[in-house]
Length: 269
Image (tube, rainbow, N blue to C red; front, side, top):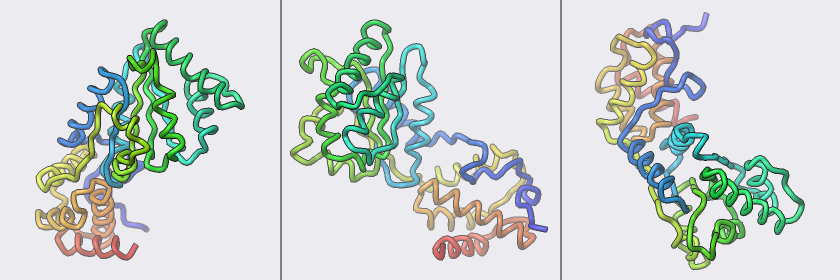
C-alpha cells in the first residue's frame, strides 16, 4: 500500500500540487500586480506584466479576470502566441464571439467595429489578455498599435494586456516597437518571494488544506526557501516532494534531511 501523505500530516488535500484545490496566497507581489492591473482597467490602453517562470503570472491574471464585472468588461484571453498574424486576428474575432473572415483586412475591421460597439453602445470595456506574449511575432506586435487605434489615436476603448517572460521587455525596447512601447501605460515585473513571505506562503498553504499540526521543522523550511530562490512553483514542488518522502519514511515531522533529499531529487529530475 502506498503511504498517504494526506493522512500522515492531517491534510484534507495536498495544497502544493497544481491540480489540487486552489489556495490563494496574497503576497505583496500579488497585491501590487493586481493593483497595477486594476489601474490599467481604469485608464485603458496597453499594459505589460512580466516575470520569470513560476512566479505566478497566470494566478494573477486569472484572479484579475475573475474579478471583472461581466456587465462592464468583456474578457478575451489568448495564449496561442505562436500563431501567424492571420490566425491571431481570427482568434481575436472568435474571442469576441463573432465569425472570423478569411481576410486579414476584414478581421481588422470586425475587431475595431466590435470594440467600438461594446465601448460606445454597450458601455462595456473589452479586455484583451495576450498570454505568453514573449513568443508573439514582430509582425503581430507591429499590428497591435494600429488595431487598437481609435479616433486618430486620441482615445483608448479597450484594455490590452501583454503577459510573458522578462525578455518581452527587451523585445519592446527595439526601435521597431517604439510606437507600441510609448502606448504602454502599465508595466510591472513580478519578483520572487522574500524569506518571510516564503515561510508564510508554506504555512498558509498547509493551514488552507486543513492542517493543524507542525509539518516542517524551521530549518527544513529554510532549506526549501534557499533552494527554491523564492519562486512559488519551486516551493510547491519541493514541499510536495517532502510530504511524499515523509509519508514513505513514516516521519512525524519533516526535517532538514527530508528537505535536502527533496532538493536532491528535484535536481536530478
